[in-house]
Image (cartoon, rainbow, N blue to C red; front, side):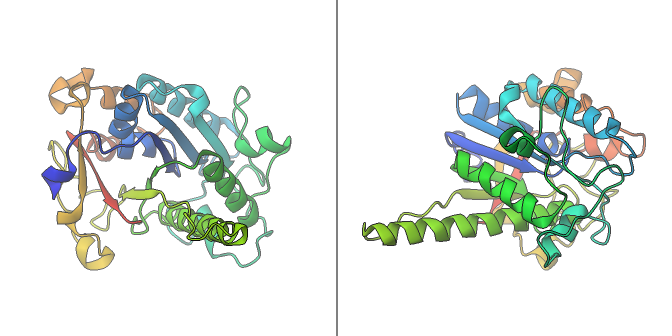
Length: 301
């Protein structure tokens, strides 16, 4: 399965990468983005939050967004294909996670303020989606987040979506996956209703391929990914707790310019190094462990 799925050209013509925080797009999908750009595919990277956990102003969030822009530029992605949603980052554990709180909230209009804001923001030179679309910031609430995400996906209708896993131990990561699935279910239902109403017979609903990957595994960040190896190993507890079968993973073997043997010239390494804010001393080993000769995914839809 691994070698068969590792063949080239399984990446389609319209792809979307949807991630919660700055650096997730590099850790999970730098190779996907690079290969898609090289083949001339339409690539959109959607950043759900500003990564501004524990910051009392916009400085950290804006720095991190700029770092993502710089890293993606190295991969060949144009700035216009990087979409900011501008929502909050308030912590990793579910009890602290902004997106987890939103997903579980029954009141779609209840606002969850962050350390620095109660509404979306972007860069001075690059506004977040809601401001660009409606001329105003969006409240930090479930209804606004879901509506923005739904519009973004509906506008692009990518053939493939790459996002974080339901079984990632970061609350934002698992909740983002659930939001993506909720939106796709609604879009499919709408397509079915419109097709039936038009009398066209059997409907063809929007059903993109959805691939997930894990950043924070159940084995713990201190244990996985293994440091200094060119290939990924199965994180302890993955199959038992998550139901993601290791033998069913899909591998993307990275292009020559991203091979570990290239050292400091490795393009994925260089893109990750643009994320200076994330590369704190206690996080460097963990983040650099994603510099491997492959990227791994599971197709879940």
